[in-house]
Length: 247
Length: 271
Image (cartoon, rainbow over all chains, first blue to last red; front, side, top):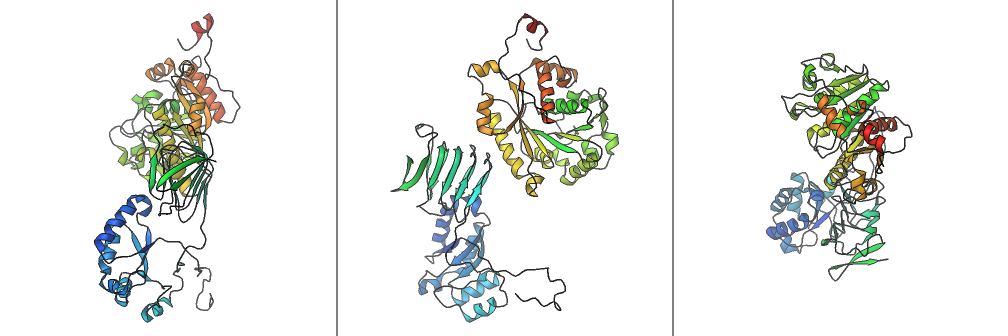
C-alpha cells in the first residue's frame, strides 16, 4: 500500500494488510424462513456459547433463481439477529437483496460462481481493507493448550484441531471443528466436529470423559466401563454410533 | 511494591479466614510489614479471628467511598507491630465494592507494605472476584473432600482467566494449594482423600497440609491467630507454610499418622 507522506503526517497510524479469516458460512437451501429458523436453532443448540454473537456469512448461491427471488431477505436477517448471530457478509443474492444488505451495513461479497453486480463491484473498490474470506478454508489452524483446563472453562478450536497437553478437569468443556487430542487425563466433556464434521476423531491417553461427541452424536459415561482407563484410545463415528477403541 | 496474596477457595467454611489470619501474622512476625484485608462485606469475620472487633471504627467500604482515610481505618495489631488489619463493613453488602475503589486502596497500601493478604469471601461472585483480581499469588484453600476440590478447581480456572494478570497477558498468578482439616487416620482408613488424590485432580504446587485440630476453634474463640499457638499442630503447620511461602525448603509434616507416646499425649497439641 503506497503511503504518501505529504498527505499522511503520521505514517505509522494505520496499516492496510490483506489477510484471510475463517468464518462460518450459512448456505441457504430454501426460501422458507420458518424452516431455516427451526433448523438453525437445532444446530445452534449444540454449541450455544460459541454461536452467541458469532459473525456469519449468508450464502444464497445454492438457491435456484425462482426461490432466490421469493426469499424475504429482511426476514432472514431478522431471524439471524434474533438468534444472536451477527451477519457480516452475504453473497449470491439478487440485486435487490444486495441493496438491502448494504442498507443494513452488511458487506456484499464476491460470489465465486456468478458474476457480482456492477453496484457491488464499485462499492468494493474503495474499501480494500475488508478481508474477503476464501470460499473454503485453505489452512486449518491447530490450537495447542499446555495448561490444565479447569472446571467451568471452555476451549473452542475454531476451524481446526485441538491439542491439549495437560489434564481436562471434570466440568470443563473442550470443543473443536476438527479433531481433538488430549495427552493427559480427559475428565470433562470433549466435542469434536462441532460444525458437523462427522469424520472428526478424538484421541486420548486417559479417557475418563463425562461426555464425548462427534458431529453432534454424543455419549455420556456413567462409569460402567473402566477397561480403557489409562490406555491410549481413539474415538470415531461409525454408522451414527461412537466407537471407542484402544490404539 | 507489595506482593498481593489472595486466600481463596470457592467453597465456604474451608479455612480461608483462619489461613489469612495465620499467614499474615506469620509474615509479620518474621519482620515483614503486612496488612490483611477482609473482602467479605456484610459477613465480616476477620476482625473476630484477629481479636480486634472492638476496635473497628472505619472499614474498607468507608475508605473506598472516601468517607475515611486508610490511616483512620487500619487497625494496628497489639501483638505484632508489623501487622495491620483493614476490616470489612458489616452493614453494607458486596455491591459497595468497586474495581476502581479496590485498585486505589491496594495501590496506596502497596507503597507502605511488603505483603497484602486479601481474605476472599466464599463463592465466585463479585466479592471473590475483586479479592482475586489484583493478586500476584493465590493460596487455594481446600478440604480433602470432593465438593471442596471441585470448587477449588473452578476457582483455579477463574484465577487463570479473570484476573488482571490474565486479562493483561502478564505472568500468571502463582497458585498454591493449601490442604486444611486433613486427618491422616481417616486417609489411612480410606475415608478421606489423600494429598495424592487431591493433587491428581488439581495438579498444584502444595504449599502445606494443615491437620484437623482443636486448636483452630480455641484460636478463633480467643481472637488469636492459630499460628501464635506454636505448641499446637495447626500452629506449627502454619509456621511451616509461611516458611515455605518465603522460599525455604521445609519437609511436609502432619501428612502421616503420628505415633504418640505418653509424653506426646500429655504435651502435644491434639487430643
